[in-house]
Image 1 (tube, rainbow, N blue to C red):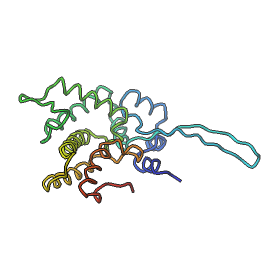
Image 2: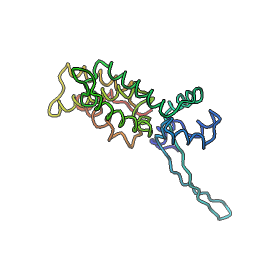
Image 3: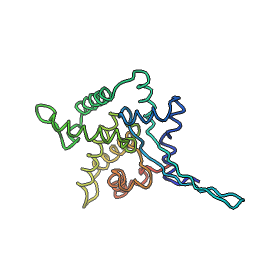
Length: 229
């Protein structure tokens, strides 16, 4: 029987062997794509120990691992197999899309402690924040935090989380007023369009668990708290 964490990961991520079978590529070539940072690494890894016994009064213990990836990994590998792009191209393309989405966002001032100046974006601060985001993405982190680990979702989540945190901090010692309740409901909808639930054991430490869930509980909106299926 699967426990809640295992079920969540099995339901929302793709196991490595399934990806290999889908594309007909071997494990060595797949691992090389990760090492070259063409695709993100696994978001979750199971380290499994299985003891086998028999009626002959013998036993053996087998140890193995299973790796689980964002579903968007399939899209990335498909693109790679069609164009054989380099790490440099992949990162540069990601950076360009990321910057364009961020720069054109109507609420960009909430992102990364407002890296925008009256004359435009602060390039040095952008580069610093982008490198952090890229490292988190390529190591599989955004496979956990967002639904599809795309540039659009990363930007959207950054902004909506900062808005939720502001609302949370502004109302630490009071309930929300009617306008703020409407804002909270809107933010909840926006958040759920891009943000994953996290595995149950992680939720309490996620932005959803620390801020959004708490705001909804505090303001009698428990019915809006997103639960596991």
